[in-house]
Amino acid sequence: MNPEMNTGNNRETSTGSNAEINTRKTLVLLFTYARKHWIILLFLPLLMGVDIGFEIGVAQVQGLFIDTASKGVMTELMNVTKLVVCLLLGAIVLLALHKHLIVKLLGYVHRDLTLKLFDVVNYMPFRNRQSYHSGELVTRLKEDTEHGSSIIEALVEYVTVFVLILLSFIYLIKIDLVLAVLGAVSSPLLFFIGRFFDKKIAIQSDDVQHKEQALRETSQEFVQGLPIVKTYRAKGLYLGQFMKQRKALNQSQARLAMTNAMSRGLTEGSYQLIYIAALVFIAIAATRNTMTPGAIVTFSVLFELVVWPVIGLSDQYSRVQEGVGAFNRIYRLLKFEAAGGTVGKHPLSSGAAGETVGKHPLPSTPGEHTSTSPPDGDTVISLQNVSFQPEGADKPLLSEISFQLKKGEKVLIIGPSGAGKSSLARLCSGLYEPTGGEAFIGGDGEGDDSGLVFVSQSPYLFSATIKENIGLVKPQAKDQDIRAAATLAGLDAFIDGLPDGYDTVITEQGNNFSGGQKQRISLSRAFLHKECSLVIMDEPTSALDAANEQKLVDSIRLYLENKSAILVTHRPALASLADRIIVMNDGGIAEEGTHEELTRRDGFYSRFLRGA
Image 1 (cartoon, helix red, strand yellow):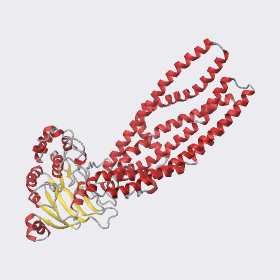
Image 2 (spheres, one colour; image 1 turned 135 degrees about the vertical axis):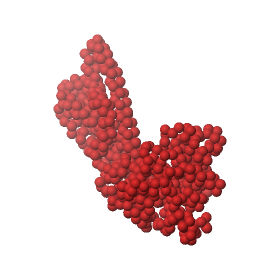
Image 3 (cartoon, helix red, strand yellow; image 1 turned 120 degrees about the horizontal axis):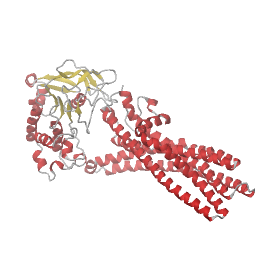
Image 4 (spheres, one colour; image 1 turned 180 degrees about the horizontal axis):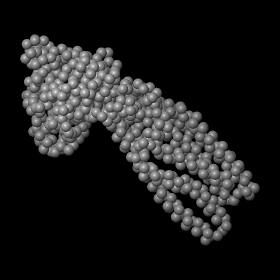
């Protein structure tokens, strides 16, 4: 069963607390991505050892220099200097390699996690996808994946610092047990002082992230709706909302910054007091001549390595928790795969309102309402008492729909606005899942070019060339095939008249093309798939004038030969393509029959023709 999603920033899943993921589960999930790059993981412990050795070595070298200089033997001092310089150069190279490998591993995990989320969003049931704001999905795909993958770096630093503290403490014991105990007591004290603010920081960070997301969504909608904003002079309304959200965000960011400053200040202040106490003990030891000058310097540096890194340890712990929070938000998307079982089985590559090409039965739905077995060999689509009611809707958009589409049959669906025509088209394409009844949808062809083609009434053009937009889901298509598809859609003369022809770049959302041109590019995508067995077109000619519409109807007739098709329209020009006509009204089927039969009845269809 696929979980339901509610709209809004406080969206919760139907699985409740099961949608949350703790630190241990986060690390396990993250390791499944990191282990693919096992060669890097193999070298990391060695390079972490170099990092630790470098830090401890610096302390020892300082003491060694001072003791050697105290002896006054220049030859020995020069030999030590040469050895130290060689070791230092080698360590610098290895430390650079260490950082390089961590950055590469982070990049790989970020890439793999982002691709996984792209896949999940692609296969997510369409109605669930609609419950997310596009700005929120972009945040999950870009920022949360980055924060989540950064756990790896934080974890490496965490382990490195922990081992460094442990080894420094062991070395301190050899020099002075009393001072070593002081360091052992001080370290956990500093760590837990930092933890005192963790819960408050986590709550405030989550609040900031939600308000940043809300502000991003508002800004995105303003940019996308700029023509409407300018036409209706609605800038003031937008600016009022923007300033209100910006003020709330500023206040939340200020509270978070203050809490972080208090946490950091209290921790660093405590460290300074502890370090002063340690210096007092070191001074006492020096007056008793129990430590050489070099040992005093070494001890001071090592004591700092025991106590000061705890602050870094605390920072890395906070980074891990931040990453866990990001993974929680990512997990709410990833859970669709585990819960629904539809991910990876039903390819639904959709545009803004859905343009799909693929071969798939209708995904399973809550309540076991869907059948994946065809009633007989000649049936392409079968709906039995199918209903569809989006979550939160007062009434179903489709109610008790029953009909069958046979191989090679063309069915025209007409009706007034709001009758449920587009909802039925999306359900038959697999974008919507029925909430009641039994349904089967399938193709009867074989190969990559067979299956279902869905043309949306709101074609979406990507920021790419015309050629790339037409060949979107068939990248192996040859130039002559793309040109033939464009010619069939009546675009060839227009494209040839452009300075760059088929290499003309389409701007965001196709804003440099008219509605009719965008619609014909969308049809060209469909025409490129010559061997598909099932075609669903939702208002394919709505943006065209009468003359161009009739030319395109002839092209559609040619394209639909030997294919099964459902054509949704409110214009009578497509009626000549239909073997059968279904008239919808108020979410149900009002009439059904051929053109001649429905005309004789003088019902909904006849009134539709008279009003066209």
